[in-house]
Length: 323
Image (cartoon, rainbow, N blue to C red; front, side, top):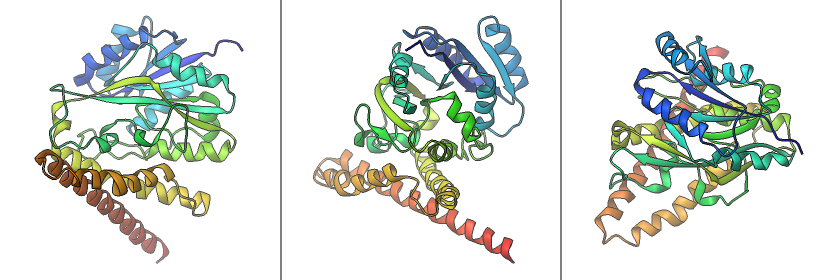
């Protein structure tokens, strides 16, 4: 089989991450599987676009999304411009290991594979996670979702960012990202997601025989600055996670007539309740275990609260529309 052509898309939005952007680009340039092109998409920031175009315009494709509808719109700008058969996405605050792209792309020799996600490891500003941090929920801050339940090459129902790739044709056929669902308020306090889960659902409907695969050897490191290492931020993200699940669940249930959107997510939460919480309790004599147990309980409560709040809001909106 001939060598697959690959486009790497990096989306960014703020000058505050210029150093991170450069490091992300450098990591792509060091890949053992060289991409055919790298597209840098700036989300609604003319000044940053001009600065990046001046610095990287000679060997990268620097684009801008002026829709102000968040990362979903920026990704769509990149997809429309991309020429590669495979599109790999990298966040502007991540660094890819040299074999990242090679490990992702090798799965696409199987024509049934339509998307591959890799392993995302969190890197903390002070070198280690806070003492209260329960590793079982690192995916809330951008780690690999549910990796404790996954094995090499395992099929997954949905792919998660920031380490993901797709065949370009399936993204286009599915209608690209739903702009607005993944909109982010850039203050960092009210980010809403769900766009990736939603597009994965549409892709599965369009390609029922296609498969999404998890490849743990395709590694990227996701940087967490000090403000995101605070307990308040972590708990806030847990609440938003619950809201997001409810929002996406409603959209996808309408399309699939009640089918569950998050089977892996639900299985993972059952695993946490059945195994991880009891494991923490068995080490109650260690203060750190009790602290992490309390945080885990808070996370579960906030996720449930966010889910319920969003469903109630949806119900009120539906009643207003029907009245």
